[in-house]
Every structure is written in structure tokens, then in C-alpha cells.
Length: 300
Image 1: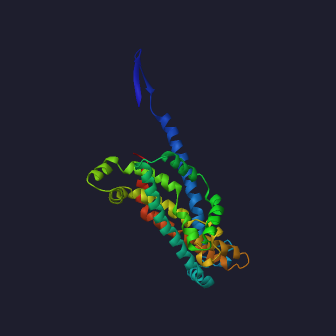
Image 2: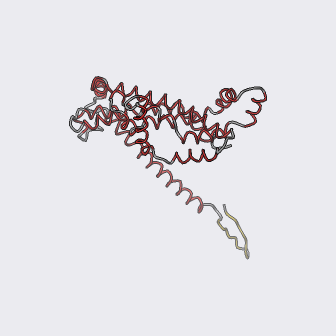
Image 3: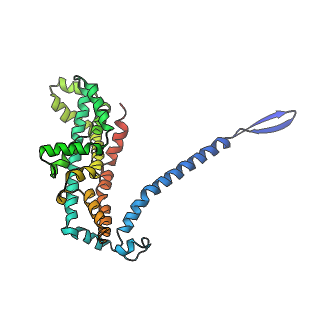
């Protein structure tokens, strides 16, 4: 863009273009793309190494032949994985699915219901109790492992399925999200109309509010699923029976044994690759609900 002016019969052109502002903008965009690219590489390179290492035998793992097409042992490693220690990995995988899927489903329902109650009902010391919920969000789960173990020991459920399953059902962060989603998704006017029509509180919640809270329920479910699937310290404290181990703890025990028995290395890597598949599948199938929940649930 340019402007012209005439002074004393002489025509002069003055440039008022936007080349100056465009140059910093392009530079800033390049820097952002560079940072994003480095972040993507930092995230994907370990996954790429895991995929390549799962196709190699034990000797190739300790050499520099990961990128070569020789020594392809994916099928053999897969067979060895499910045959190792009498097929114990299959038991661990089933335990993790039971802990994570069932625990996340029940935990999400509990968290959404509690968040709904904090949002829609009035009761004594409501905000103080919610403050305790927020305080519990900041407590690391590893700090709670020993008190939970003492409580489980007093109840006589140590080294049982319930010692790991019951504690994961209650998530303070899920309650917080449940209240936020309830504020954003469930208008008070809709509940008032349901009450006028004669619906009880449980009916209004189950048939009206819970359907509106669907995206929030999926979001909390995904957070719970990821946390329970990756849970390691609590099962290590609670369990001594290998038949009750989740995948994370089972692979840890095999990896510890690999220092003495190197044949465990290929099966540990293959088991780690299979262990990430349920989380990838869950996010791929439910991501549209998760993304809409994160955006719409935060806006009233």
C-alpha cells in the first residue's frame, strides 16, 4: 500500500505497507511451529522406539539394528508374551480392564452425581465441604497409599480385588468437574419444569440431568480410565498375589527379573506396547465427547 503526494510539481511516493508487521508475525508463527514440532517428536519418539523394539528379538535389542528389517520377531514375541509364566500376562490384562473400565464407569457416575448435588442443592456447610474436595485434589495419591493400606488391613481386605478397586471409585477432581459440567449443561429452569410436572428428584436427575451431562460423564470417565490404568503404587502396596496384579505392576516385576533372566526383555517391551492400546482406543472412540465436554462444560 502506498500514498502519493505532489510538492512543487514533483511527485513523491511514500510507502505505508504492512511488510514490517508481517515479518514479526511470520517469525512468531515459525517459532510456534518449531516448538510444536519438537514437542511432537519428544512425545512420539518413545512410542516409535517401543513399536520398533517390539519387532526385534533379544539380541537385536542390545545392538543398533532397531531400524533394520532383519531379525523381525513380532509374532514370536507376541507368542512368548502370552506363554510366559503360564500365560500370566492375560490374567494381568484382564485385571487391568476390570479395574479400569468398571472402576472408571462407576467412579464417573459417582463424581457426576456428587458434582450435581453440590451445584443444584442447598445444604449446611456446602461450600466448606466443597473446599475440602478441592483440597483433596492437591493431595498426591502416593501419600494416601499407607493410610488406605491400614484401613484395608483393618477391614481384612488386603491382597484382594476390593483393596485396589474401592479406593479408585472416589475422585475429588471428578467431583469438581461434575459441578462445573452441571453448571454449564443443566439449566435450573429445566429442573423446575420437571418438578412442576410431578417428577421426583431422582427421576429428574436420571431422565433429564444425566442425559444432559453425557459429555461431562465421558470426560470424567476418560480421566478416571487413564488414572486407574496407569495406577501402580497402590496395587504394589495392597497386593502380593500375582494373579491380582494389573498390567503396570506385572510388567514391573518382569522387568525386575530381566536383569537376571534377559529373556524377559522382549516380552516386557511387547507387553508395554499392548498396554497402551486400550487408552489409545478409548480416546479415539470418545474424543468428540471429550473435546465438546472440555469446551462447553466450562462455559455457563
